[in-house]
Image (cartoon, rainbow, N blue to C red; front, side, top):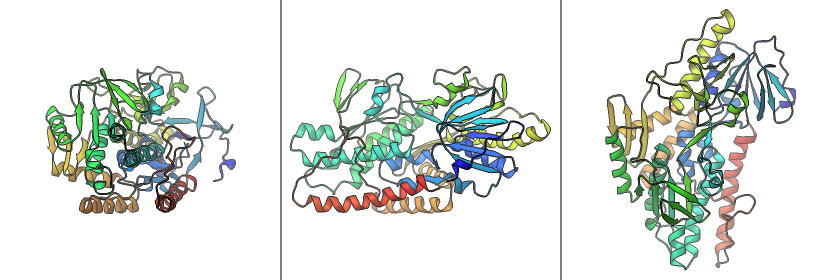
Length: 465
């Protein structure tokens, strides 16, 4: 990458700087690129990540390259768009300059912040070490390794209590991500791994889904929540509503008054906004989101726009827009379509109006829910609709083909091919144990070779745009 040649743009040039290559930032960049507007897109990752399918990477259904695409490849047909692989550390609103971690800075005439969200632990940040959230490829690989490693350790121990602990998985949060994770782990243990071990039966794995509210999928119609509960129970998931987590440690969680030993805890209970919002020094909501005007600008600075999960914008009913991919994508498209006219002729950017295309969540095989207005679907048709929509939204034909073929193979065989375990850096308490059983060394070396192959693919994706 030629990052050292990035120009320090002067303030008298029209240059839109976009921070974040998620759904909102990328959509804005593409529209502005079509209009020939000069754009600098900055992101600390060199790939765009399709987060709605990230849970399938975490549960070995897909590999990381299936849900990520290099940003430079996506934008290579827009000559006016320049991609900078860097991390933003500061914003000088008066000087209209964005500061980067390597000491450089980039000037802007207009700034679009679309840096997304991070897991939010409600002030208990120490829990993150033991209950990872799911926002990045690294998160997904970490969860997958810990999940599969728990089964491996359970196979090796002769202690029945330790085995039960290792085969207990706790998902915290009953929203779409939590429901999808719990259902996917249940299918992994009940079907994919069912015959792979000799001393344990993965079917006996205990999956606990804890939700602090009275029902799952609180944003959906109650009838769809009941359907999701019924399907999860059918898969053997232990669903606990009105149950709040009190503490999370390496080997247990405290749910209400119960200390529950577990091999893995997963966090799906809340998300917070990117810390970049604080750099603006403007009012934030309780979740750290920037309060924006209807045209997506901030008070006092009409040249600064905030999109997606980082923006707090209320709908016509006074409710904040949800942190969904379709919201960010629509905001990016709205701004990308109207900003060129504003730059050229001073045309006012109209207020943003969100057009919901429906909410959906998958529970398991042949089981999903979909809701749009009065239309409420469940079961096989909703599951098929979910699959079609997600394949369509993937960036790149090769990803659509790869994911479709992976899903077809999994549907026919229940198999999941991306079952790689990676040792964690730093030798944490989750470090892969040294196995001394006869014959295991040879099998392990073959597994390491496969792991290195997938690691090479993912490293190419991150380092070679």
